[in-house]
Length: 220
Image 1 (cartoon, rainbow, N blue to C red):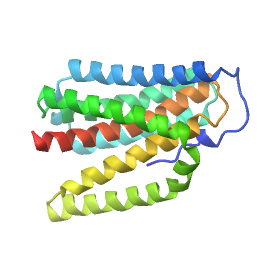
Image 2: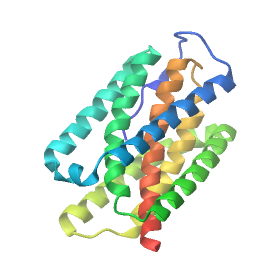
Image 3: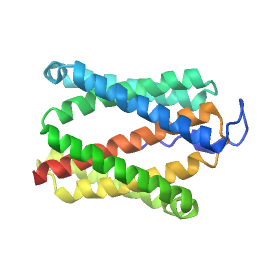
Image 4: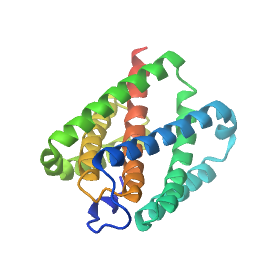
């Protein structure tokens, strides 16, 4: 997971917002990202996406994500940051489209509900106990790297996938949501920082959703 430069900001660039307006702005930007993903799922044929050469698809995916992250990390203009955010939302939306197409719609809706409930819960905990989440940040990063390495080795070299990995990644991203939400409320409350914080949280939430979808899909 790429470390965001957003949460290291201390100087105020732009008009400061009230706490309520700032958090509402984060929520609106997040909702736009999820709505854009829904539009992609509804309007883009997943079979067409699967017909694209995998190397071309994944190179485009990473280029688009890296460009978007670099754009919102380096910009203090909320409109430029929003453009960067959308460059992240687009490739994530294409991945979500291909993944949800293989699951029953009822399972997808259940995964959405569980993800929403867990996300709100972790945001509340991140607000109440920001110091705790700061303490476990290093452990979260180390755990995520280890689990990703194990998953890559299992899938590409051993041809297997253990169910516990999805649970482990889901728990790790639960921690990241609390951590990033706590950090988002400790930097200057500007519109640009709201957009940039939403971008970091968006990636946490989508990763959590995809893992819950796999877990629930196996149960059904």
